Length: 478
Image 1 (cartoon, rainbow, N blue to C red):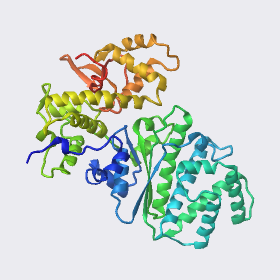
Image 2: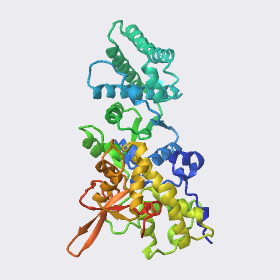
Image 3: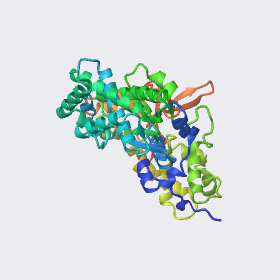
């Protein structure tokens, strides 16, 4: 049987778009690296970290599409989350970290309660209690719950704050100030939830933390508070034998910037990091990225073993084909599958030619890789300066350059709001640039990028190298 590379569905760059248009790709074509799905259901790990395109949203879509009977997977995106308004939910003189944590407790518990009420099989131990609470939430405009972001808007209204006082007084016959009344209501909801029985399992997936990434401190404080509150709520659910779990999908680079003293403890005990590059392994050919391609190839050709071996030339520019393809990426599923898609787009026959690879790499570099790098710079570098940074890199026309070269070019621009060191650190963190440095006594050179070693950092003393995926887009001479 002749295999045709053009017939393999390689999916989309956005996992949610892929889940909507090609659900089978994320049901049957999902590669479960390190049995990450079992970590969601069978362990206390709730924080799933990874760089852009590493598979976080794909996990969310797979959980939603493949949920078994009796399991409700609810996705909650913070794409349009109003962080500034969120900071005003809890009033009073308490520390911001505490108030933000209480605010998340409110949002998440209301979300869980809303899902419970919608579950026709769930039974509360105290029917009158849940009825009075449901009536209050409906009259206050909280139910029906539209989204967490909408709940923030509703909660910060004066009308709602007045309703909380009235409900608190009615339930406790004791007038209290607004903050205590609000926290009493949160504890009341928590108590009602713990009184349910015979309910379905709930997995709430929180994603989209980086969709509106700014340099404002409140955003980082809010995300740190979210992670800490989710940890505490999951512990509460487990201790009370409630079949609920909240998981958070977060970019590694954002997590590393969070102002939280408990960060390392949470990372060690409760997190999983998507990492597709195997540090210390000379050859990366036998990796999960190739397995993803093969898995999707078998949805069309069940008998195929290795897609690249069956349909690609053995070498590209005297380099092993696996190595040649992978070095165009940052070893993320999105990068690799978009490279495959770019090559597939220019194919005119069942098998892939060297010319197809050449043209595909050009399309990938210009239409995907460079724009993706620009997207990753947003939030760390003022948007109006991103093109200027790209122009500096393009002006060298070389795969390597020095710190001095970059600074000299930068000083020729009228940019006051950001330093060249900050820009280079951002470029290094998104693996747009790496380092080449001497190694050993034999004049050898070693290369490193952030995606290869997450603990590495930019060093102005080392030679700077451009990621190979940028060469075509930046007209590098090679």
